[in-house]
Amino acid sequence: MKRIILGALLLALACSAPAQPSPETPSPIPQAPAGREADRAAIQRLEQEARALASLSGCAESGQCRAMPVGAKACGGPRYYLPYCPLTTNAAALQRKLEEVRNAEQQFNQKYGVISDCSFVSEPALTSAAGACQAR
Image (cartoon, rainbow, N blue to C red):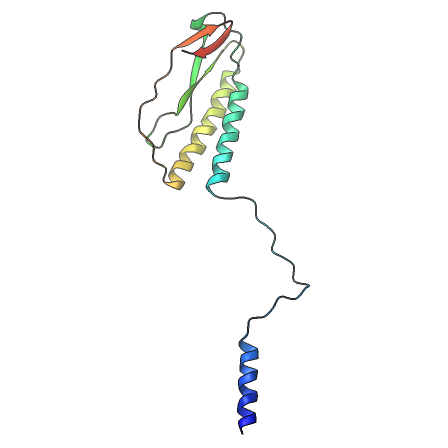
C-alpha cells in the first residue's frame, strides 16, 4: 500500500512540475522598442525634418524673416519658434511638418501625463545677419 501511495505522489509531482522547453521551441521574437523613449524619438525625427525644410539664408533684410511655432508644451503654446526665410523656404510644407510635430507632442503629453512650466513663449525678434535669418 505504501508503494502505491508513493507512486501516486511521484506521479502527481511529475504532472504538476512546469514543462521544460524543448530544444526545438523557438525563442520569442524581440519586439521593437516601445514606450516613452520611442515616442520621444519619433517627435525628434519630425522636428529634424522640419528644421531641414527651414532655410535660414536668402533674406537680405530683417523684415523679410519669419518664424513658426514648434512643438506643444503641456500647458499649451509652443516650446520655441523656428526662424526661416520665406524667400527660400517652402512655407506651406514647413507649416504642415510643424503641425505634425505639434500634434505628436500633444498626444505624447496627454499619453504620458507630461507637465510643463506653463511659461509663455513669445515669438522672437528676428534679424538678418549676412543674409541669414536668426532670432535676436
